[in-house]
Structures are given as C-alpha cells and as structure tokens.
Length: 335
Image (cartoon, rainbow, N blue to C red; front, side, top):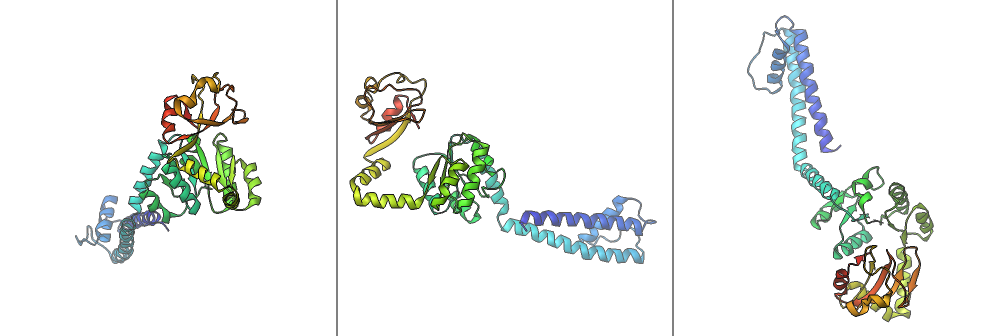
C-alpha cells in the first residue's frame, strides 16, 4: 500500500473512532451529556490522553466505554502518526511536488519528441536528442530511473505507457514525433496502435526486436520501424565492403567538420518557384544538394540544376561545419 493511501485510511479510522465514541457517550450517558459537543470534547481529551478529567459524571458502563475508546483511539492515533512519519521519510511528498512541476513543464512543450522506454537503447536516443538540442519527454515505468532523468533535467512521466491517458499527459497531440523503444515488441505494437488511433498526424518510430514484428508495427501505424539486429548487420557489412563511406557518414552525422541535414522549403519562401540553379544555394551557403524529396513522396537523387523547388520540398544537403547557420538565414526550416 502506498504511503498516501495508508495515511488516508488511518485518518478515516481516527474520524470513525471519534464519531463512534461520541455517539456512544450520548447513548450511554444520555442523562448527563447536554450536547454532542460535550460528547465530542470528552472523546477528544480521552483519545489524546491529556488527562483533563471527566467532562460529565460517568456511570460504570460509561467508564468501560472510556477504556475501550482509549484503547482504540491510542492505537489509531499511533498508526496515523507512523503513517505521517513514513510519508515524510520516504520522500513521497517531495516526489509528488517534483512530478507536479514536471507535468506543468510538459504542458508547455510544443514540437517535442516523446521517448517511451529508458532502457539501453532509449537512454542512447535521449542522449542524442539532447545533444541536438531537441525538446523531449520520457515515459518510463521503472521508478528507479526517475532520479537519473531528473539529474539530466529531462521531463519524464514515471508511468506505464500502455495505461490510459499517459500519452495525452506527455503532450502527444502537440509532439513532433513518438519514439517507442520498449523492451517488449507486444508493448511497442500496442502503444503504436493507441497513439496512431488518438493522433494519426504524429510520426511514430518504433523498435522491433524480432523481424516478424516489423509488419505488425507498420499495420499498427508506425511510420518507421527500427530493428537493431538489421542495423547492426548492415553496418558490419558496410564496414567490410565500404569503410570509407561509413566513415564519411559518421563524420557528417557528428557535424564536426562536415554537416549533413535536411531542410524544408516553407510555402512563403522566396525560393519557391525557382530552379536549383537560380537559387544559388551552393554559392551562397557552400552546401551541396544531394537530393530533393517532394511533398508527394517522390525523391530526386542528384537533382537536375533546372529542377524547380516546390512548397514543402525537403532538401537534403551536405556542407562544411556551420552551413546550417547560413541556411537558417535564408529562411529554410530544419525538417
């Protein structure tokens, strides 16, 4: 039983003892008790053992009732006091206050990423998202991981993501994306289905431990499915056959000497309607456009310089470190 429930039950027990004892005095000593207030006062000084003496004359039956009231009252008050001490010592009050502040912080987030599961893979995802400066929220069911997340100043919900209302409290309706890295494929499928049903506009990236789970996740609504075994096997093969390509991609991903990123062309951008040649992006920013992804899903690899940019096109660019700052000045939004 949680400390809060224990405290609530003990408080109700004290109230029940006080009301029952007061009613007993009025019934047993009906000739001597002028009002319920006097009976209540007699009960309080009896239970608290302050020893003020009898408020009204007690018959033998009344004294037996007083002994009973003292026994039950002292036991109940002692239990209540121990519940209060337990609540304070356990730090549950402080945890509740921290969680309330955390929920207020989550309620203010927009275009954030929700990471469900803070295991080995989830912690790496969180670390990478923090490195890139993206706002995020973590949903984790293990309370033992809460201090670690609080030390990282990462907003978190220590709850089961499969429970009703948890995704909404994480701000799924306002999120940029949902990442599911729970250890159980069944849980990932369930949360994917629930999230896609609630807010189908939110992109979902889900982890699949087994290859057979991938089609299930896609049917449930996942936009991308990550299988660590496949990724690991592919990288090993590439390291053996194309090591320089792997090194190039890793350097670009780290953004130290080289950057590779994607940018969306806003509808109001001055670049809309111009050909790649006319935009002069390479001359103005030093970035090379390696691909253009149209809003309808078509991808132009090594696009023709005469290709005309359309609203919501996504430009995949490669450039030297700092190219992103120059692209931002042109009004391109990071996709």
